[in-house]
Length: 466
Image (cartoon, rainbow, N blue to C red; front, side, top):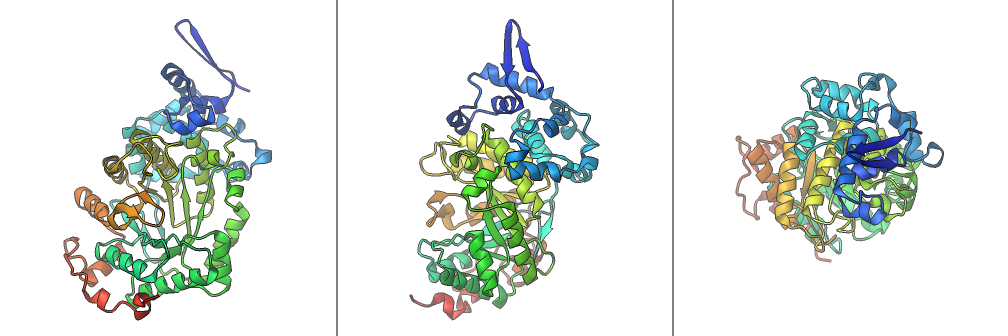
């Protein structure tokens, strides 16, 4: 075991192991204080970062934060590590790695080439030494492109998940939100519904309803019903028109067990979705959501700081080649990310780590009503993330999810980002928007009446009473 000691003046700081150095080096956040792993003083945090900067990247392959024998995520990280890709950076310390990532030598092609040689712990470690602008600059250089019925993640593009949730799964309410989002140019990432029920017949109805809309209007996008993966496997077996398979994932085996999943189960679901062969331009069939604090909330963090646990979740995602993965950054509450400052920092860290590891990372830029945050904080975070090359964001009517009861981002927010930063929708989806005259030749969404042709022709079964 290495000796993690650093002396500043006459004061000597001693850290027990690499796990403690990582935790103490993390920016302050309420979840790490709750877990009892955070630095006790600003001085201790700075010294831990000085110590972490001197750690060779190769040590993360030898000193595992969670033992190989007890955790399948650790085994996945080690067993799939690409030594050849790592060889380009294996001589670097964490501090050297930061400097190299910020240099022009680390261009997009190089970062893509070495991504499979970077472990989540390496990504988390270097992020702890970075300012917000560093996280933005490097993430901007990381290009991760995926496809199903359209192409997600191209440079200078920003996709939107149309999230038409309803507290009772009322088809009229869902249809109205879908129409609203499509007319604002949202929905290229996915039309994804969080259902209020786990009833398989009700879920089947939702799948057919969204599939009818996509097919009737030939929309080059994909649908997803965000129910448990075991429900989705059963529905595939029953013939449901499943495009993407969804599951929340975490960074430890124990935390994933609390979700009722294993890596083997996720692979089974991926295979089931592949068997349907519903993609047209690609076959990335998985959709994952993550969030800092999920491992701690399940008492499954093993003393590892919450940001490193989050980065480990991206190893699970990376292994299954998803179309989409996003951190739901402020959803879990102020016990884990207390205020706007912590939420902003966490969102930038998550996006940086995910992109560096080769994951198509988006972000649900959000907060709960009991957090010390507001919509101005969300404006700041979504603007920073879009500048950093965010893969996709959420689009919800009025930025207020009436089913999940949290504050997120709206269709208008996506239009703002696309206009201010010159970003585009997925190319296939943008072509459809122009064909439908929702968007003009200059990429501007048109002021269409709610009584336009899409509402007039909406399938009758979507608007039926009861």
